Image (cartoon, rainbow, N blue to C red; front, side):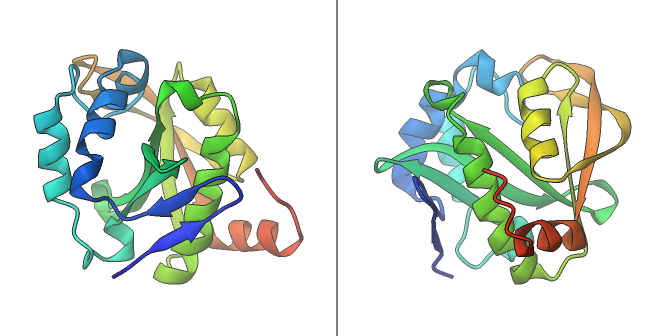
Length: 184
C-alpha cells in the first residue's frame, strides 16, 4: 500500500527506515515519552529501528502508523492498533518543538478522515494519562467522549497510572465533517 495524506501544513505517510533518527530523537524526550503507554525511556536509535521493522506497507488500516512530516522531517506519529478486547485504538505523539501550534489536531483529523472510510469501523478508542490535559483537549475538540477510567502501564515512567479512556464513533466523526466543522 502506498499512502500519503496531505493536509494544510503536513504530509501523513507510511514510515520509512530513514525515519529512525528523528523518531529516536523526539521520543528520547521524557516530556514526550512520559505521556505514552508503550514507549520506553530512554528511547534509543535501536528502539526506533526495531519499531520501524514492524511497519509494513501491507498492514491493514487498523494497524497502520502514519509519520507526521513537517517540512520534510518525521516529527511525530499517528497510529492505529488493536487494543485489549480487539478494540481499535488511535495513539499519537509529536516532537516537543512542534507543540502548541495545532499540528496534532490537524494530523489526527487527516488520519481519521482516512481511517473511518478505509476500515468501516463503527468506533475507535483512545485516551490519555490523567495529567495529559493537552491531549485530552485535542480529543474533545475532535468529538471523542470520555468512556471511563482505567489503569494503564506507562513504560517510560515504569508504573501503572490512571488513564482517561475515550471513544469516537464513526457516526459522530462523519456528522462533524459533513456539517462543515473543521476541528483543526
